Length: 116
Image 1: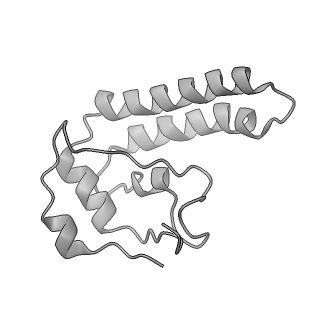
Image 2: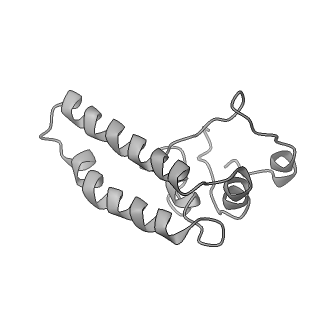
C-alpha cells in the first residue's frame, strides 16, 4: 500500500497549474477500510457542516442512478457529470480553502491500493 507522506505533502504549493483532484467514488484506488476521496473532504473540523449535509443530499439523489444498470451509458454519464458539477459547486459556494483541503488530506486515513 502507498501511504501519504506528510513531509512531501507539507512541501506542496497548490495553484491552478498544479492542482489535481483524484476522484475515487467506489474505492477503485483506495482500500476498503479507509475513506474514499469524497469522504476525506467531509472532515467537520475543516469543512462547513452545511457543505457536508448538501453533499449527502447529492449522494441520496445520484448514487442510486450510478448503480442503476438499466440506464444507458449516455444517460448515466450525464447524471454523473451533473453530480460531479454540483458537488464541485459546493466547494466554491462554501469556500473550501487550500488550507482546509490540505488539513482534510493530512488528517485522513486514506490509503491507496498497491497498484496506485
